[in-house]
Image (cartoon, rainbow, N blue to C red):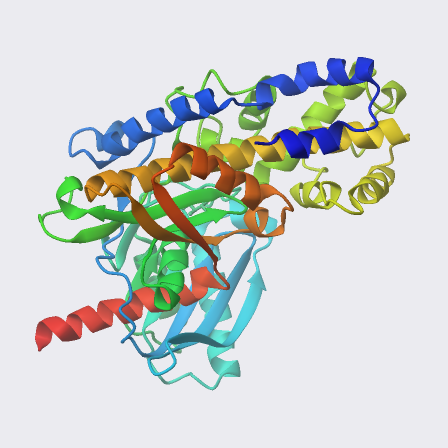
Length: 468
Ligand code: BGC
């Protein structure tokens, strides 16, 4: 499957050097058999996460989202959306237009979150969010209106209701004190009340995967999976309520936020973790947490590559054995470099520019080896994601007792969108591991923001329907 890509990538490397380099890369090449095993382990973990008594200790949290329906195309109205999940925070004004079946972004504003704030007191973070929202309302002339608000908060939360959401733990480089174990909606409302100069309407809390699924769901009503492969990775899907033992009810479905990033946190992926994955985990701010995510997502891939490059250099397989200060600096090799390096045309030239930027003295074989390393790491990530997605698709098919499932996945995230072969490799893996599922991939634009508005809109539609 990755045959073509790796042949291209091995061109121009002398056989002797190639076989030595391959020794280091071998653990990154997962066979289809291994991927099947990984998928079978995840299948078991999905069940553990859903169980009434087993979910407390389950590494894959399978969090109920209280989203019980995908859009039916009749939703409408104006909404505010907040989107917090990476290094930026966004505020959006969104209009859902029924006649055109469109979710329109009327306007939006980005506020940077300084690194210190990501690690500081939670109160400071929420005051900053409330201040950004205020600036936006002023700039849009919306102050004085109390619009319903969708809050995309892309961290694992134990949701009690659509507007009550307890942060289980921070991920992706955030570690603000006083937020874990607290209701995030309450913290937001308290920050707004501390200011006392504006108010908001009803709030719906959403994970970014759910937002992505819901925003794609307005365009394609068979969209029942949402997947993110960006700074972090995760997926949600529509599960039968009777299988969600923690939630009352037998009929219908509920969207489950799998938090598949935590897969392997009980040690079940030990056999495929490399020594480089172990270092990435141990030097992160949350060791032992989100092992699967650390093998897959944008926050970590570049660092895995950097560690490999350092090792190859120390063993005289690169740059005549000479590292540089930049190469020895954690996180200096950015994940976005991998996309540039692996570009089909121009990839080698990009590699050479990047290596020069990193203060390395390279020759043409070095640049080819670097490209090979990037390919091994990105390819493993795509295949692991593919295996996980196949597990969800197979589960939905079996749940519904179908011989064949046709479904749509809404996808977002820079790794998926920007990397040249990632999506192709992911799909090829899904085809192999879920041969009875026919999956359409819909790339979401602004999904997490627009989707939060969509969740609020669907909740309003359902409330109206029950009233009438
Ligand atoms: C978080 C998820 C989120 C994912 C993608 C992970 O680190 O735990 O809640 O969906 O990143 O943003």
